[in-house]
Image 1: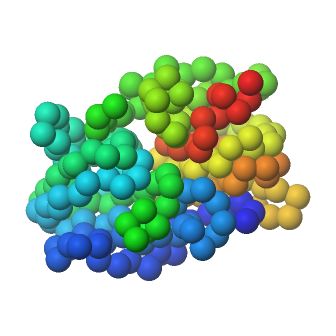
Image 2 (image 1 turned 30 degrees about the vertical axis):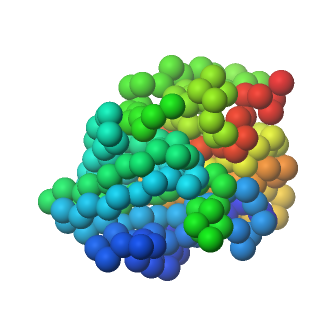
Length: 116
Length: 116
């Protein structure tokens, strides 16, 4: 694979696995491309909440809106231009707020393969 | 390591290795933290240009300004909210434009270790 540029419009969004809320993920680079990492965009509707146990190391860069991520012992909140790092193995609740949120994400290794 | 949130103000910026221009990188997560990936913020002054051969897979999310990345056979340009993926082994020229740029980056594996 060569150098590539991606915009949100390049992503095909699908509902986040095991969720029935308005939380969508759209990979633009993943296991199909032969590299070690998955890259994509995330889209959260207003006031959504999902519980996830991280099968991979997951980095979210907030592009729009705000997300709060809580664990049993911590809480972090990030707005545009800020990063939330969720190490593999952590159990988290990710919440969006009244305006929803848009993220760019990178996972190592590929999150879809880790869920299989 | 638990879940962490990072803002640009958490980064200690250093001049990009081997460069003498106004291009700075500030890791917020790296080999010191025990995980597989490095996370950080990048800052480019106006009209800078650096040549890099990628020792790692490198993802840049443009937060402010614009960056253009060219290889011998391709050119990609990204603005706020867009992603540039530079696979390991690629030789690239990264250019900023009149307003400079700010990025969030993720590398696998750790770029500082790969340069040693």
